[in-house]
Length: 151
Figure (cartoon, rainbow, N blue to C red):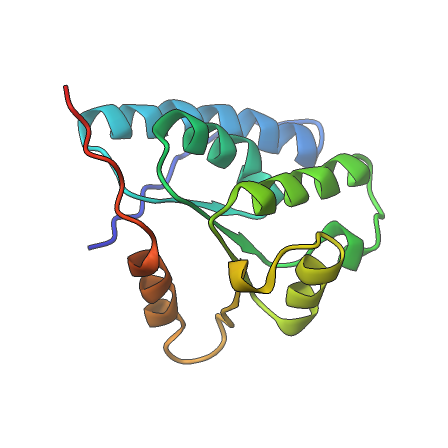
């Protein structure tokens, strides 16, 4: 069974990068509460926007990390402030993840060549195709079972 937890966040940053870093702090806080009260088996980060919290939770919980990458900063053309840092965060999230889901063949190629990810780590999952949810569930099921938590 898959449960998705959303974290409402009402603060504003002076730019997208700063806002995402503030949001990541709230995600970490809420995810830790959920982990300590209910537990969870997998962490799924989404692009650089959640990389800080996803990696932090992966290190804290030792649960498998999966990342979805919609596009890389290299594909987008490094056109905004913090582009170099955003690219580094994309690489770090991809590096730490057990599986990386690319939404299209261009992103798959960028992950493969720009980030030098091994082919066996990347899966092409097109959210515009029927059955994409089943593909993700198969990926989740293929991950190693988490260690038992003893209290």
